[in-house]
Image (cartoon, rainbow, N blue to C red; front, side):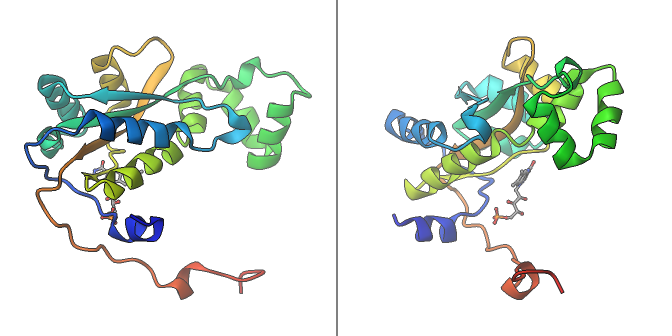
Length: 201
Ligand SMILES: Cc1cc2nc3c(=O)[nH]c(=O)nc-3n(C[C@H](O)[C@H](O)[C@H](O)COP(=O)(O)O)c2cc1C
């Protein structure tokens, strides 16, 4: 399938057939995720492949009770290590300088004072699994599978269900399987609303 077609066909599927995803498909999706770009090529991510029915049911419960997730034969757990530590950075460190420039020094100073730096890290690291996740999604579509992003989850609970080591969290889930529904195309804003050229007027 051409990329253009996969992008056009991609819709959130929330009901799946009772049919397993092949090992070959899983391999293809993992490989697509592996090749995703990351800032500084840090590749700060980890992908869980969950097939156990009971575990998927517990994950669904911890995902705001979105029980439909249980109809998926497979769920990807998109994880990251919480390695950002503003307090551990020294004046002059490149990373700190970039953060100050990017977010403004006042916000960085404020966040530095927050006692639980892990929680602050979660905000900075939140974007890590998004690009590999979308690679997984588009690869799934290109192979006749469907998927859905899940951002509504209790990060702590899901990470516990997955027995993730200290400091590693699951930030997003992605149920994958053969679609048992044909979702409608959701509205999209018109191009005129989205794009500006040179500067906004
Ligand atoms: C980061 C992110 C988190 C999302 N979280 C959820 C979720 O928890 N539950 C859900 O049913 N859909 C979730 N969605 C799916 C969106 O509702 C969906 O992508 C959007 O309505 C557009 O529909 P489409 O994907 O069919 O084009 C999420 C999408 C993204 C990108």
